[in-house]
View (cartoon, rainbow, N blue to C red):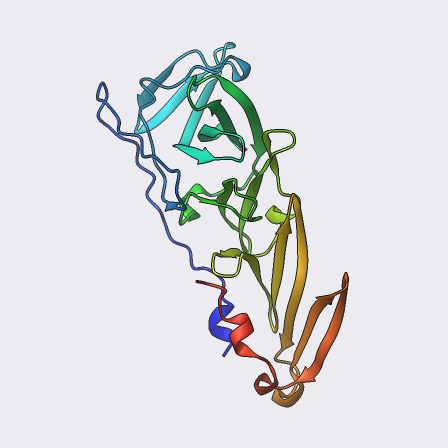
Length: 272
C-alpha cells in the first residue's frame, strides 16, 4: 500500500531551451499565486543590471544566455525565472538565475526588488553541488506559503542527486523584511509539500528500508512531527513502526505492527 508512495523519481530529461528570437518583447508571467513552473528562459534583453554581481551585459549564443562579469569572465545562465510575491509588508518582485560559473561550479542567484520602484533590496547566492544536473529538474520552483504566515515562500527544485530528488526553501522573515533559507530543507531525501495539510513530506529509501517523515514549518524552523518506518527484512505482521511528536518529544506509538494496524488516511496526502 505504501510502496506506491515511495519511489525514486525516474530521470526525466527536460530539454532546457532558451527563447531563440532576439530583439522581441518577452511576456513575463505574473507568479503571485501558488504555481508550479517549468524552466522559463528569457533573452534578458531588458533585464535589470545588478552591480553587486558584476553583470554588465547579456547576449544569446548557442541557445543560452551569457553574462559577462566586470573581469570579462563568461557566465552561462542555465535558467531564469521572473515573478512577484505577496509578503506581509508589501509586494516583492523576484528574479531567480541558475548559473554555471565554471566547468563544475554552479550557483543560484535570487534577486529581490521593490515591486513599485524595481530597486534591488536583496541578493541571495546559493551554491549548488558540482555534479548538479539541470536536465533532471521536473518543475523549476513553487510559490507557496509553507509556514502559513500570510507571506509567499519559495521552494526551488534542484534535480536528482544520487538516490535523492532535492530542493531548497526560502522563507520570508517579516521581522527582517527579507528572505532567508529554511535550514534543513535541502537535506531532505525527496521533499514534497502538501497544500491540504500544510505539511512537508519526505520520502526516504535505502533498500530494504523505507520511511515517510512529516515536517511542520514554524517560522523559519523545520520540525519533524511524525515518522513511519518499515523494512521488508521483517515478517509482514511486525514490519511497521510509527512515531509522533507529543509535547516536544518523538514518541513511538506503534512498533513492529502490520500494515493493517497503520491509519493509512493519515499518510495518504503525500502527493496531493
